[in-house]
Amino acid sequence: MFCKKCGSEVNDGAAFCPKCGTALKSTTQKAPEQKSQPIPPIMPMPELNMGNTAQGTSGDSGSKIEEAAKAASEGIGHAAEKGKEFLGKIGSVGDDGQKGSLKKGLIIAGVAAAAVLILLIANAARINNFVHRTFSSPEKYYQFVEEKTVKELSDHAGEWYDSYVLDPLNFYNKSVEGELTVELGKDGQEFIGLLGLAGVDVSWLKSMTIGADTAIKDDTVAAGVSFSLNGSDIISGNMKMDMEKGMAYFQIPELNKAYLGVDMAEAGYGRYDSDLLAEFQESNKKLLQACPDQAQVEKLTKRYMMLALGCVDDVSKSKETLKVEGVEQKCTVLKVTIDSDTMQDMAQVVLEEMRDDKDIKSLMKNMLLAGGEAIDEDVDIDDVYEEFQDTIDVILDELEYLSYMDEEIVMKVYVDGKGEIKGRSIDFGYVTVSSLMPERGNKFGYELSGNSNGITVKLTGSGKISNDKISGDFQIKYNGASLVDITTRKLDIEDLKSGRMNGRIEVRAASKIGSVIGSVPGLSIIEDMQINMDFKSSKDSYSCKVGVIYDEQDVGSVEVSAKTGDGSKASIPSSKNVLMIEDEDDIEEWLEGVKFDGLVDSLKKADIPSRITDVLEDIEDIDDIYDALYELDRMYYY
Image (cartoon, rainbow, N blue to C red; front, side):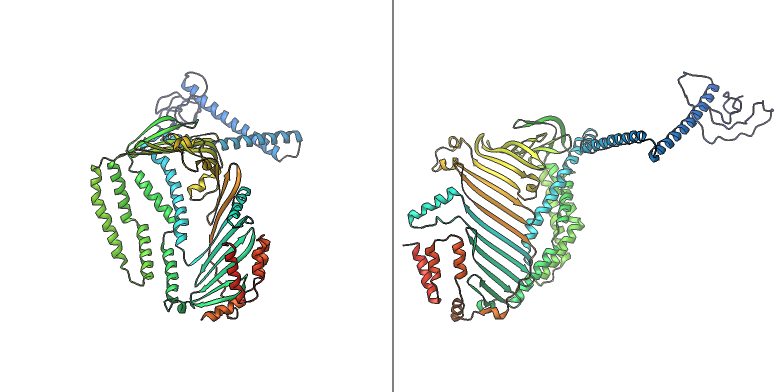
């Protein structure tokens, strides 16, 4: 039969026309001649070609659809049966061989899937960079690359701000501990022993340490100092201050357990004002609370750097192999040109954003409010903020003159396959600065250089990097001539970006420095000397040990360490353990209570010469103290 709508031949019994999809009367006999009621098609079905035959009749097409439907049904049924069989194997407790085979297959499939996932994750950065590098304009690709740098710089800026701005400004809740230690090596002890020829015997000296600590909390301050010789604690001193009452207390526990008390108002002839100090503490607290925190600094830094980068519109892209100290890496080179018009655009977009930035407005108002309370004055915050906006408007009006300037900055950015910057050179016209660090595997080459008016200074070298720690050999060169050799050992470069040092640096004069700087008195000593610096630091602590090696022998070292934290409220001594100083008689009374037994024992432990300890042991009363001091002073001058 035939479709009455499109005229295509249709197999007897078909429900729909395979050509146009019109519903048909299901019958194998010819329908009586009468006007039919056409039924609109639900959805036209496209003509399908199932199988390998080139072209067939319309009847063949219908058969193909039916065969495809049947095959699909059989396929679904077969898949269902296999699925049941698969599930049955998983849940069965039958043949161990089948279970072992299944488990093995599952393990292989899992390992394969994990391997694919790992490969995708490992190469995600490369894939992302490839897409941006291939399908973005040079300007957009440059902004994509720099966005990572901006994020890193803003994070480090926040860390620097928190550690080196906010923390030093805290005068109301803080503790600081510091220590300086000097140790003499074998050669150092031999050298200092030569002082005996001048009548000063210090051959017994091996090490000494000076310590200090301070803690501020609310209305109390505590401070202390200590002194050690050859690892033995010798003497210390404590000071405690009650700012509310205006009292200060001093103690030397190795000599006398009693404190000397001082009324600061009387000692300062009435100039001490406890209320003024308390107000200072409170004002300091309010000002620090009003200052932007680390997260806000990072947010604002990133915002304005990205605004400036959005103005860059002159970027070209090329390929180049970056080579430094024998290490090569293929890179995409982005040449960025920033002329006066671009500088003007950058300044304009940044200033306009600052003028109306709600975050800056809020910060300014908080700081103005805290500052006004600090100086006990009412500040018209709205007037000050409007003046700030007016100042920006004045600067914006002057920006047009930048377009008449000839300054131009040309920068090259070297980008690897992951989109990471491996080098950067900036030409300011009269000064060129570059920092290049290609990597190959765990090896790297490094060059930091500056050139101006024909003078070139470089720090260059190579080494290995592992877990952001670099170990390598470098040189400082002046116009190509080596001056200083530097070796780093596990120097953490990520900590370095945050303003912290961790690792070891060894410094020594270059082997041929004499041919560069000529004849200099004492140069031979410098040529045979090496300085070793070991750094350990974290957010709240820092230490640096500087050791001196001469002719491969240990001379000695100096170590400085510091630690900061929250303050603790000082324990003010009870009145029964305090001797108030009102005149000289009170001082003499304190001296009468001085005992040198503990001090002498500590000095003996430190191997101090007996002629010194003998003098101190002979002290029995206050008059003997003055005699002993005279004798000790004369001992080293006569």
